[in-house]
Length: 503
Image 1 (cartoon, rainbow, N blue to C red):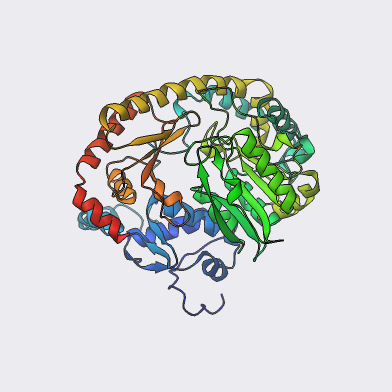
Image 2 (image 1 turned 30 degrees about the vertical axis):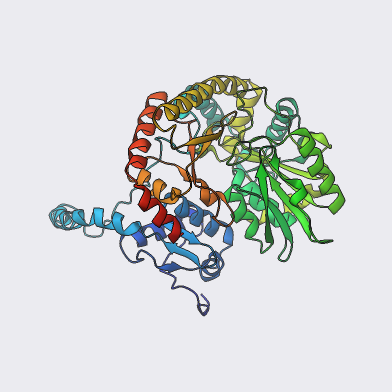
C-alpha cells in the first residue's frame, strides 16, 4: 500500500481478498459495518472512489459499484462540490440499534460457554427491499421459477468440459444469436450476433461505454433529469458532463451546442425516459441522429424496460433508425426476469466491437457460462416472450392500481408526470417539499422510493417521488400509498419551507 494522499478523508480499514467474494461486495460490507458499528460517524467525510481504489490496489469499478449501493440504501449521501459523507440519518439508525447492544453482549457471554472461542461472528446479508415502491424490481412473484429451475438442472448436469473452461469475452455465441434475433424482432434493432456483447447487467454496459468512448477532457451530454447510475459511470472517466433538459418530447436536442470538436457522446433513454417516463418522438429522434453525424459523436441508447408499454405497442429503438452506425445500444434481462440474473447486453457498431471486447477483457475476462446456457434456452424455447406478454398485463393492472390509489389519497399532493410505460411512475410534489426527507421518512416505515431531485445533475429540480410498481402486488400498493399519505400529511408546511431553504 502506498502513502495515503494528502487532503483525503481518512480511509477506514477495509480488507479485500482476490478470488473470494466479489470485490464490490467486500467493500460494501466493510463500509456498511463500519457505519453501523460507529467507526464511521454520521456526517463524516469518506474518501473518493479514486483514492480508495488506489489504496486497495484495485480498479475503480468495484468501488463505484459498492458506493452506488451504499448511496442508494441511504448509508452515504453525496453533496455537490463537497464529496461523499456518512448520511446524517445514520445517527437515528445507530440510536435505534444501541438498545440491543447490551443484550447482545450479555447473550454472547452466555453463548461463549457452549461455542468455540475461535468461531467467527456470523454475518447477516442486507435485507432485500421487496415492498412498495422499489424501482426496477420486476414481478418476482410471477416469474416461472419451475421452468428456470428445470433449465438450470439440465445444463448443470450436462455442462461439457469446453463449457467449464474459459469462455468468449463477448459471451456465449448461441446466446448472442438469440439476443440479436429477439432485438431485431421486438425492438427493431439493426444488428447481428457479431455486434452483441453479453455483460453483467446494464451498469457494466454503461461502464464499458464510458471506457471505450470517453477520456479525461472529453465532453458528454446527459439527460437532466437522468439516471444517476449512468451519470456516475460516464463521469468516472474524468470526462466533462454537460446536462441537457428534457421536455414532454424527450431530450431537447437544440440545447446541445458544443464548441467544435468537444462533443464526444450523449446518453439518452428515448423509449422511456428515466425518470420522467416520456418518449422521444420521431422528429426529435431524427434531430438527435443528425446532431451525432454532424459532430461525429456517439449516442448511448439505454433501453432498460421498453418491453412494457400500455398505451401502444412498444416503440422501435433509436438504433434501428440509422442502421446503428452512431448508436451504442444497451439493455438488460435483469429488470425483465430477476435482478440476481445479472445479464445485460451491448450492441456495438461494427467499428467499435473489438474495442468493447478489449475493455471487457480488462474487467472479468468473460461472462459466467451457466446462466448464459439457461437464458439461451429460455429465449429460444419461447419462455421469455410468454413471460413478457404475461407480465405486461400484470404491470398494467399494478400501474392502474397505483394511479387510482394516488388519486384517492394523494391527489392534492402528488401530480403524476407520465404512466404510459415501464415499471415505475414519477409524481411531482408541490414546491416547498423536501423530497429527500420524504424518502428518508418513508424508508423508516419500510417504503422505498427515489427522490426526483436527486436525478437532476445539480439537485435543483422540482421535488417529487419515483415509485416502482412492477414488483408490488396490488394490496401492497394500496398499503404503501396509505403510508405515504400519512407521511406527507405529517409534514407541516413551515417545515417544508425551512427544509427547502436549507437545501
